Image (cartoon, rainbow, N blue to C red):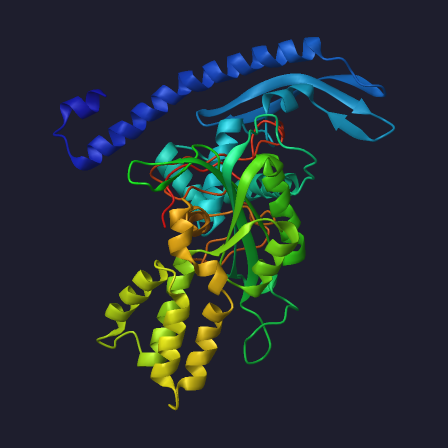
Length: 438
């Protein structure tokens, strides 16, 4: 401090000063957290009633890491000889994860999911929070958390959660996409490469949310804190029931109307008929417009054609007026007898197969969302997928790397990490907040 005051200030000196002040403030904060947790551990141990077969073996020390530093924690240890299993009551009650406090474990999992490598996560934690934890420690921490979260989201739901109430409209959103993977995770997997190898894996993700009202302009409003997510690398026959279980927890049986938003693929449509037979199926508008662009590319030759943007805008307006069949007829007439007719027909098949799911004018008059921005936005950030991080079209990932799901609008939301010590209190797939983006 005296050195800073004695010398001419520079940007480097100010930076060093801030880091030193942060370090100084962290020391008493770390001591306070250590004292409070030690007191809590003592109370937990004093009140603990051993289960049959458990024998107290004495007190053991643990070096606990927190966001402010590390401290020693002494707590009781019990051992069950028959099960050959040890147990620290205080560790479980305090939510410690491999010697890390809940707040630190949450930050580590978020960084482990967000960065392209554990080394980058280590560097980011050190630079932004003054947290010194190695890449190997990050990996050891996040892997079991991600695996536990995946198992938790796949648990069976026999009835709605206690807080579930009757709702006018429940939305169930399903989507799928190829995810780039590291080569070691694709060994033995068939793919579309010339040599038969794969560069991607199919991932499924979905969300459930509810709607009670519309705003002053008549636009649907998603219920605050109603959105939860599920995801899987498994086959769609397994993903459908997982998505249905999530809807049951939301109160599927209490919903007056269920809307299933999908990407228009035959697999998801079939899943909807099996798992949500009474739902109104709808192709989300984003995917419809994306495929409209593909039709126009084949029809016009490229996106650079001077008519491309104008005609794509017309497709959007016509689709919003329930005129998908008119658009199909117009395109067929335009390309009839030309060399590109077959290719255009291949692209039009998407619309032919989804005519009933693209009545957007009708859907809007009924007050429904017509877009899947809730799940699309989350996919762009990160999702729980079989205990691994998935970054859509962004980065190559390790199948064993766990992750957290994010919000549709990261500026308006917050992330929540699965807490294995409170399995009934919070949803591991991270409740997401913020407006629907489509």
